[in-house]
Amino acid sequence: MPSFIESGHHPENILPLETASGLTSEQERPAASEAEIATRQMTRLAEQVNADLGEKIVGPDGRLKMPMFAQTLGSDRVRLESAVVRSIRVEQDELDDPLIRQAAIERLGLVEKSGRLKPDELTDALIRGLDREKTNWGGNLAEVTATLLLHRGLSENFITVRTAAYDDLKHGIDTIIVNKETGEVICAFDELMGGGPEDKRAEEKARRQQEDIKRGGTSLTYGFTIKDGQMVKSSFEHVPIFRLCLGRREVYSALTECDHDGDDLGPIGKNILDGLLASLAQQTGEYLTLDELNPVMRQRLEHFRDGSLAKMQAMIAQPEQAAA
Image (cartoon, rainbow, N blue to C red; front, side, top):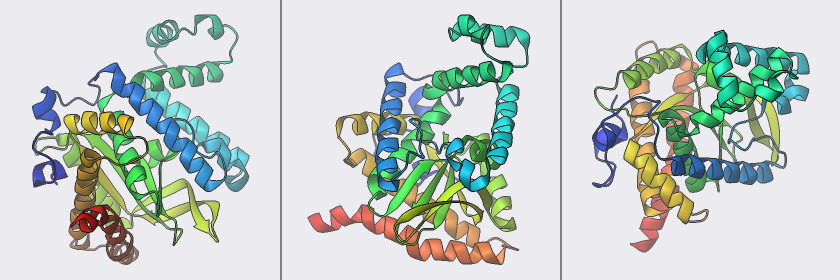
């Protein structure tokens, strides 16, 4: 499944990742200024969404905060799932290797604290520090950029936030969108930088997501809906999942523009968002042709296509129509 980059929905001066940098690794490290912009913009998004929802449920990284769900899901469950997140991250970052762990402690300036903190507390501090280091990695910047553009372009009718760490690591979803009018969690996304025809990561994600869709979609443990104008925290099943692919130059251009345009969606961001929505429409159409598609998922995809997705595309097209 090609990203919208290859399907003509991008300005000529915005190049795919492979053309822009010659690198495809998610660990490519762009200019530090992009990480700074991403941090500022996610902090701003969190402030706006929290104000909209009436509760500080979103952290400064734009992610839903697991502890805020303790009353809904139960504090024991949240603690257990936080431990699951910690365990996965220890494995991913090789923090169970004494040499790697010690190097991270020294690099992140935690030597003094390491003697006072309990082992799990130190691990959590290391994970937070590593997350700050990874802010400017390609995959994270693609996730931030897509979330930011969806928020800026659609916030009048939709709420866009990054998922809690548990849903990211266990269910493979980075971002969710909630329809303010219906209260539905309409879809979830897994973002990546790249997505060209030779990108094996994108190809594997597409394969896995199609299998998930056929079985009935993904789960969302830390989510919320809107009822009578109020946020209600809840878990969800049968959530449609899509992938959003952004090129390296698109990420740079969109973040730079967003940092200079207040809270408005500029022409570059609008063009990229239009392409992302076109990609969602294409993926929805492909999902609906799958053999043995779960009937609940078929209904949800058709509802998404004819309702929320159509509304999103109309919102982005509206300024052009007015100008014409």
